[in-house]
Image (tube, rainbow, N blue to C red; front, side, top):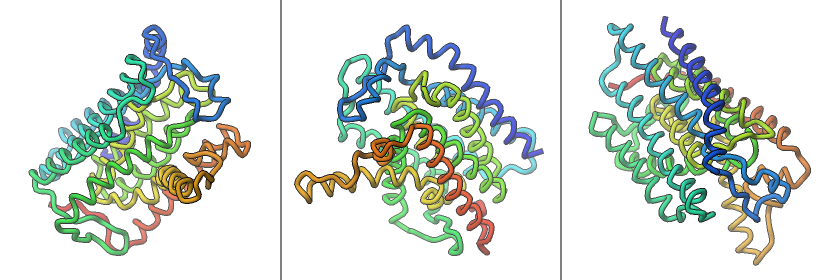
Length: 342
C-alpha cells in the first residue's frame, strides 16, 4: 500500500513535467526568454543562443504538486501509521525550501533575460538570499523539535551540538551551488539528479521513511519528464530557476531522512563540478595565469578534450548511479539503521 504512493508520485511527476513542456516552451519563445551564451564558454555553444530558459518550471510543478498531494494522501490513508508532527514538517518545509531556492534562481534568470544583465544577481546577493532560505528552513525544523544529530553509516546518529546549524546551512548552500554549476550541457543536471533521486528513493524506502521516498520519486519522475525536452539537442534550458530548485529539493530529501552526509556519495558529481571550479581559480592565481583544467566546471574540460555532450551525460550519470549504489549498500550493511527520531 505504501509503495503505491511512491509509484503514483513518480508517474504524476513525469506526466506533469512532460506535458507542461508542450505549452511552456512555445510560451517562453513568445516572451523571448532566450538564453544568452557567454563568451567564456565553449565556442560551439554559441549555436544554443536564444534557446528558451526557465524551463525548470516544468519539473518544479511536477515534483512539488506530485510530492505534496501524494504525501498528503499517504497521511490520510495511513492515519494509524502517521509519524510525529516533525515528520510532516520536514517534508513540507523541505518543499518550501526548494521553492525558495527556485525563487532566488528565478530572480537571477529574470535579471539576465528581461533586464539584459548577463551576470544576473551578484555573487554576494545570491549567497545572502541562499543563506536566508537555508537558515529559515533550519529554524523551522528547530522550532518543531528537530534535534542536532545526523546519521552516518556505521556510526549511527552523531550529535553535532551547536555546530549542527552552521554546518548544515553551509552544506545546503554548498550543495545548491554545486548543482547549479552542474547545469552546463544539455541533459546533464537533470540526468544526474534523476539517478541520485532514484537511489535516495531506495534508501528512504529501505529505512521506512515513505514521505522521503515519495519526495524522491516525484523528483525522479519530474526530471525524466523534463529530459524529454532538455536532452541533447535541448529545446529548453532549466535556468538558475531550475538548477537552484533541484539543489534545494535534493537537500530537502537528505535532511528528511536525517542523513545529508549521504549526498557526499549520491551527489559526488555535483561536488566534483564545484571543486573543479575552486581548484581552477586557486591554481590560476597561484601560477599567475596557468590552468589546471582546460575549462571549468569539469564537464567543459571533457568537452574541450573532444567528448560529446551525450557521452559526458552518460558517463556522469553512470558514475552517479555507481556512487549512489555504494551509498545504498553502506546504509543496508550498517548495523545502525536510519530511524526517525521523535
